[in-house]
Image 1 (cartoon, protein in one colour):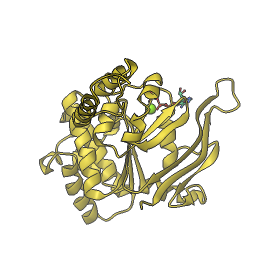
Image 2 (tube, helix red, strand yellow):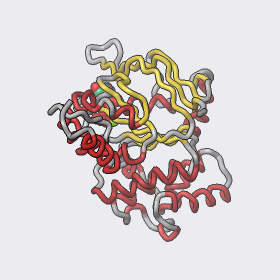
Image 3 (cartoon, rainbow, N blue to C red):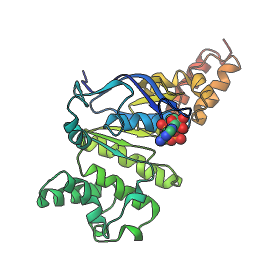
Image 4 (cartoon, helix red, strand yellow):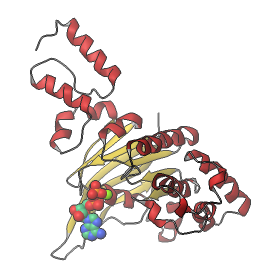
Length: 290
Ligand SMILES: Nc1ncnc2c1ncn2[C@@H]1O[C@H](COP(=O)(O)OP(=O)(O)OP(=O)(O)O)[C@@H](O)[C@H]1O
Ligand SMILES: [Mg+2]
């Protein structure tokens, strides 16, 4: 049995509370994230994904409700919040804009240096994470500004990985990248989690990307938690996901269409292998509708 690492209890956050422009960004979120899960976070624009994430390492404090790390309220002792931020590492959208040092090495060293680690340990970590993000040591002395967009993104992510957070959270790590760049980031996230056993959350607008690597899917809808379950279970609600304006995989859309036409098929189909099984099952039933 996996144990709960991070939990939110009735977490609610209101921006500009008490003013005419107040926004209920997240409402009553109850969530238990288990150790070593790879969670894909999805939801339409403005559904509350980034707001939720910022609560998980104490960058925002809930208007009401709590966040528990290992069963302990992260705000129990205010002075401990720094330690929480080392344990839960967040990499924001377009993190490459935050690179500022003159070498990749120094940029990756920034987080671990803040943690007060010694130079040898920092050096060891830098040489480890540069491979995690699919680059090699020849990059370390380069200027981040000479790298391609995708490479810069990976260096920025490496900087958070070098802090060895127990939970790594990436807000839209694939945003704005071409299909090859997206694939690279996805397989990098998958490998990192397999190698380190850490818990990883990543926000994505693509159900297809999430279905490729995630063990769990967290769906936000209009500031509420709609689903948190395995990929397979969440895809059973393909119809609802589509109605929430989410971009479901083409294969899933095809099976939804078949079901709408009266064929007796499941809709939690998102890989070719599953599509084949469903079609064979349908044919064995005579290929007819319900
Ligand atoms: N700093 C802020 N001040 C006021 N309102 C905000 C702020 N940041 C976000 N909001 C509002 O809170 C709600 C949730 O926003 P949030 O950024 O968490 O959504 P999101 O799911 O991450 O969206 P996206 O997919 O566009 O990144 C939205 O209505 C948004 O306009
Ligand atoms: Mg966001």
